[in-house]
Length: 173
Image (cartoon, one colour):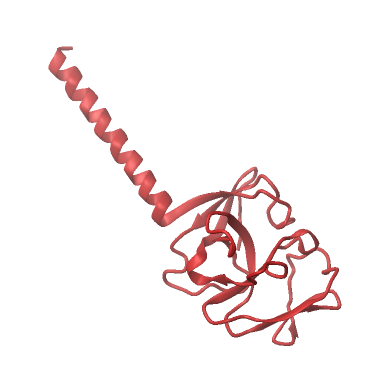
C-alpha cells in the first residue's frame, strides 16, 4: 500500500470516529442519558446499582404524569440528580395518613409499593409547574416529604426513566 492510500484510510477512520463521538454526545445531551440508581429508595421497582436509560424528550410532547419515574435535579442542589416517582401533580393536594398516600382526599392505588408508609405527612398543596416526588421504598426514601423545598419544578426534570439495561433488561412503565 502506498503512503497516500494509508493517509486516506487514516483520514476516513478519523472522520468516522469523530462523527460517531459527535452523534453520541448529542444523543446523550439531547435525546437520552444514562442514570445509575445509588440508593434503595426505589426498591423493588429498581434496585441499587441498576442502570437506566432516561428519555430526555419525553416531556417535550406531553406533560409528566402521576406514576412516571423521572430523573431530576434535587431542589436544594442544582448538581445532584435524583430518581423518584411523580405522585402529586400541579394543583393537587398530597397527604399521607393511616399508612396510605392520598391525592385530593382519594387513596392512591400503588401496586409498585410493597409496604405502607410508617408516618403521616402533609397535606401539601402542589403549586403550578411543580411536582411532588416519592420513592417506591416509602420507609427508606429521602423525598418530597422531607425536603426543605418540597416540590420539583418541571424545568428541573431531566427526563422519564423508561428502560433498565443493567443488571437485567426491563421496561419501567
